[in-house]
Length: 127
Image (cartoon, rainbow, N blue to C red; front, top):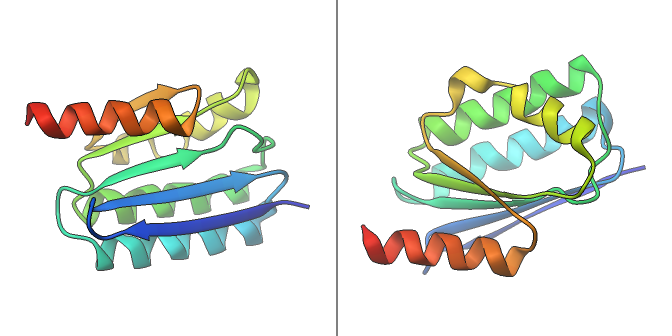
């Protein structure tokens, strides 16, 4: 069983999405819905930190939902995303491939949420 959580920091214009365990298609669909709501709530140019260190690889149906979430974020004007990843490459590769053409925003990877925060804060200061 998996879980997900979305938090919004309107002051920083940043969304925090945590994906954990085996979400399956239903969990990925719920997370994609949350991405749509976040994109509507935040201003164009917002950032996302996606903590997926414990996310398990999912099937094609679930990945279609991931693509939908990525499309919503891109359409909503997301400027950058940092994915907090683990050592597991299989799940990461599947997630990266889902909706590859939809990513019109900068994507980086970090080993912790703290490192992701630093990357996005530095990016904001340089803009």
